[in-house]
Image 1 (cartoon, rainbow, N blue to C red):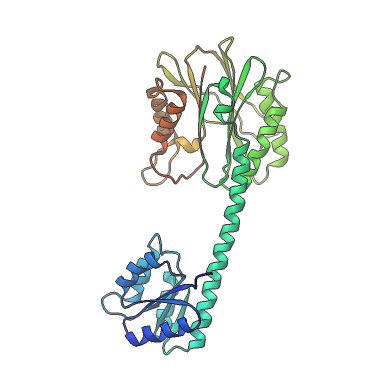
Image 2 (image 1 turned 135 degrees about the horizontal axis):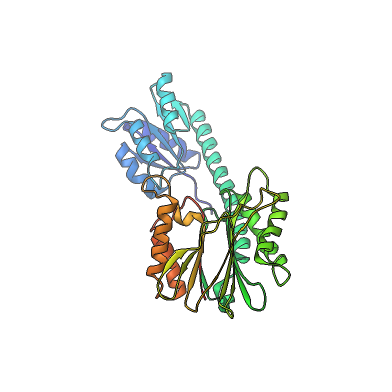
Length: 372
């Protein structure tokens, strides 16, 4: 059996509390009484009301102060508040609504008006919650579908890689892939699609197919990204673009090839403990019909490690923020400091140092490391 909606009534006058409680209970609601603002603030997080009816004129703490504190409460802050008071002037009504209250009822109040407004705002809240649930379910389905195409290190042990992936939304706009390019070379790819909206996450679903279709013995790593660009320029709109870095590693020959398309430079940590950025410039993808891609080739040794990442890892804005250059220095140091740890531990620790303990991020984050 469904429980009746709980309504918290806040008024310092006992007669008003009893009258409102009687009205609500007779209509099938569960009424909880509070004789003051502080009492209401103690009760609200515990009883989780669907609605709060709040008197304005109360001793010590008036309704405006109580409203402000309730809206700031992390548990009760989304509960709709209806002001009820003998104050009938426009200024108080406007002040209450500006503070975040959803409605205003003047004393003396009529039963029909109170119940009509209560039912309206509870239905609105329930409809809003149902809409959010539908949206969340869809996002989770999209997230599950997106993550299903992200390769797990356990599925490809010969690639010797580990990854930390933190999307801002349920489905993110960053993408990575690891795959055999030829019989002798392994491909490591990281991309960052502009924007945090769902449009960015939809692009990621096509990248895996584009990578696989345009890599192999018939294509150089540079040709792979150029072919992807040719497709993306036809489907990306409204200035949307992506940056990408593709590394082809031939372990047999100890040869690494990096192709960069406007992406932050990978970090190389040698087996001897030296760390540097593999800095090479290139155009972003999805905007220009013809792109110039940066390419770097170098020898690598067993035990060398390479770290690919997206800019959400190294950039942080707002209070306590840092520039990209500062973030890069932190990342290089973190990758160097963790070189003696297993690959999975090194990636997790480096990501933790850069992102901190917060679970909220301004941008998607990918950190992918592999060992030669």
